[in-house]
Length: 188
Image (cartoon, rainbow, N blue to C red; front, side, top):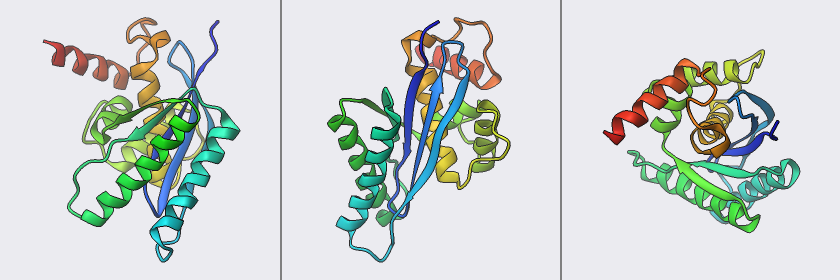
């Protein structure tokens, strides 16, 4: 039996940066290793906020020794300040991955939602509920940033690990079947 793939998911943000670590086995089952949120003060200078975020992500990487990192891809939002802060926190996460020799990929929010729930426009509660089910958690991961980080890690593992090709086990969840079908439709 091969060892599980350990993925760290980062939901970037300046005030709250979600950090989730999961182990995903070849049969696509997953278990929680760590979940948390790195917080920085909105009143602090931007350089200090980025330092706090970097320290939190770096600590998780050193402590949990993931194999890969998945980061939410920055997308256009109406609030330019939010986009800038998210992009800066995302850049910090990708830099830390490079510093530690980790492969890193970005995934869009709709890509993550589709992988976890089978629906690319799922709401926060649907994502939290499916993450709790997949990881067999007694409660929904809180806050939503933490759940999003776990969802990113799961999405990345299910989509990217060569040991876990979709369809190999024949025991796909409804969300995994939806993901497989969406990928097939894109290739046509």
